[in-house]
Length: 73
Image 1: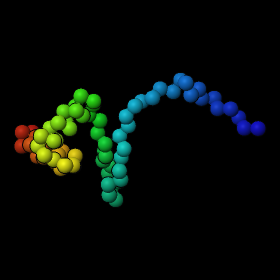
Image 2: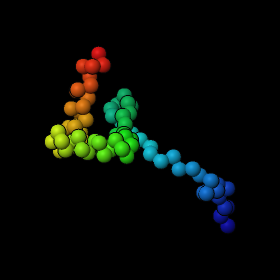
Image 3: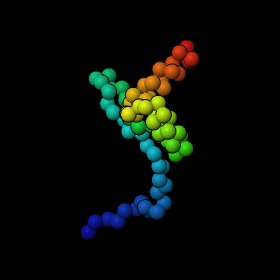
Image 4: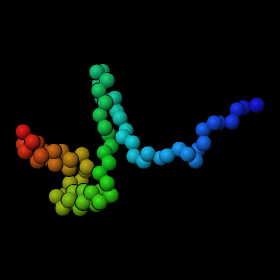
C-alpha cells in the first residue's frame, strides 16, 4: 500500500511569478526569458508601445534599452 504524503498541500505558499531561464550557449550562461513588470506598468507598456507604433515587445524593449544605454555610461 502506498504511503501518504507528509506534505500538507494547504500549507504550501504560492510564490507567484518565477522567471523562466533558457540555456544560452555552451558556457551554460542563463538569461531571463520573462520579466515581471507589474499590472500598472503593463498597462503603460501597452499604451506606449502602441503610441510609438511597435508591433513586438522585442523591438520595443530594444528601443528602450538603446535610449537608456547612453545615459548610464
